[in-house]
Picture 1 (cartoon, helix red, strand yellow):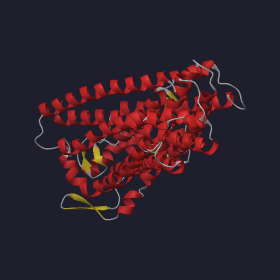
Picture 2 (cartoon, rainbow, N blue to C red; picture 1 turned 135 degrees about the vertical axis):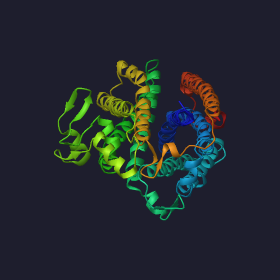
Picture 3 (cartoon, rainbow, N blue to C red; picture 1 turned 45 degrees about the vertical axis):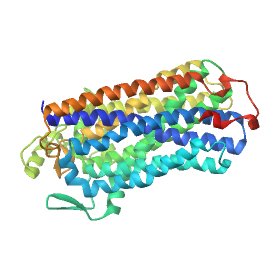
Picture 4 (cartoon, rainbow, N blue to C red; picture 1 turned 180 degrees about the vertical axis):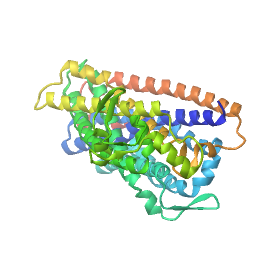
Amino acid sequence: MDALDLARWQFGVTTVYHFLFVPLTIGLGVFVAGLQTAWHRTGKEHYLRLTKFFGKLFLINFAMGVVTGIVQEFQFGMNWSEYSTFVGDVFGAPLAMEALLAFFMESTFLGLWIFGWDRLPKKAHLACIWAAAIGSNLSAYFILAANAWMKHPVGYEVVDGKARMTDLWAVLTNSTALAQVPHVIGAAFVVAGGFVLAVSGYWLLRTRAGMWRGAARGALIMTAIAGAVVAGTGDTSARLMHEQQPMKLASAEGLERDTAGAAFSVAPGIEIPAVLSLLATHDAGATIQGTEDLQRRFEQEFGPGDYRPNQPVVFWSFRVMIGFGLATVGLSVLGLWLTRGKRDLPRWLARAFLLALPLPLAAVTAGWLLSEIGRQPWTVAGELLTAASVSPGVSLAEVATSLTVFTLLYGALAVAEVVLLTRHVRGGAEEERRPAAAPEQLEPSLMY
């Protein structure tokens, strides 16, 4: 093992850990804004209670996401300076827009929302949480646009060994980004829906309060709709992968040779004929390129080297993403059917929601691994190899030290996150902590 291997491990550990907070922040912010909108329109007190309850969970998760996200910026200079030198002119533009526009908008209006409960007019205060939620989604857009450029670089030229941007609009409207953004944001809403369902399920097992049934119903609707978005954009992503990243597609299916009417592998030895060709091209008889044949072509185009990613990781990440994602969405569709009309949520289903909490998180993590590991051995497809991206002169001991420090620090933060979320969930909403009060008697400022 050398410094490159440890640098990749370090970036992978910190990125995956940070990404656990991102989808929950994106989806939960919109859910909280929806709850506050319902309170604003109806004046019903339980919507206010739910807004405060899930709002505090949102704030805990947001704060942890900010802390862990800062480390990502540092690593470009620590271990990946050659990468930063090559892509800085292109990659830096969407990241700057994310920081100066989206994150500024998100953090500013979130601060106004936190401290404005009893200081701002109701409509202005409601607008603040919506602005913060929109800022979170804009932030995701700019970051995903930058990430999509690494998979399918457009709007640039290479001058003196460095990528120079020639068309910002091409970068921001990259076909890969336009498919990836709704796919990832849809998955974020599935994660948030699964989280709300788990919390609601926990309280429905303890009390039959109608507010928790209402929260669960809202999460069920959000998860089902988001699941449909994920499926639709996943279809688009598969076709783009066939065109732009054929090695990733072949590795995800364990397909070694160019095959017409390629089958989809549910698991090793279990195949559905022609389905892979149908998914990738909408033509059941189309030819899908295999890893070994692609390897030979890439050697001719780019020179000697191994252009195949870690196939077992890519193969199983693809199946975990699909399987766990479908399980979460399927559970939400079942919940919608069983709670139609005014039917109560069955206790066994509430327990299932609680137990299923890890599924959407595992699905989005697997999807991220598929996306990033499947691009290897490139940091920028066709332009810059990962081996050429690492900082020169960084020793194995230095990377090992920083990896150890980050791993221990992130482990401590993980414990803090779980303790804070668990403590707040167990504390319940105001309905469980004190007798109900009339809306005009509530003191929102006491919550923050």
